[in-house]
Image (cartoon, rainbow, N blue to C red; front, side, top):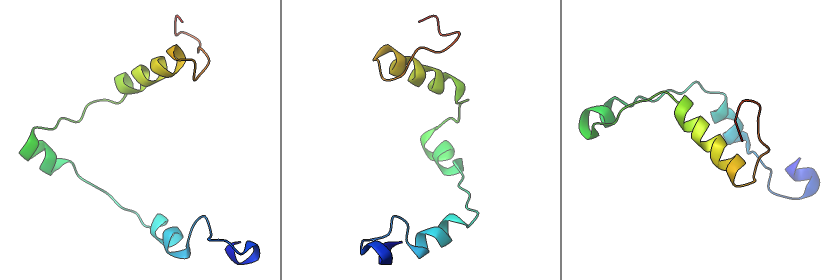
Length: 66
């Protein structure tokens, strides 16, 4: 597509190849050295949704009480 339009492509061949690789990361070092704790994502997602709704960036959702 980049060649057809004469522009830099949105995704290079190298980026697509990297995207196909299975990669994993561990938080073990941060847990061990910094006391980092992995917590459930539910509360963070709920707070983010409430912020977006409260600031008018998203419509109220069912069950929000907003």
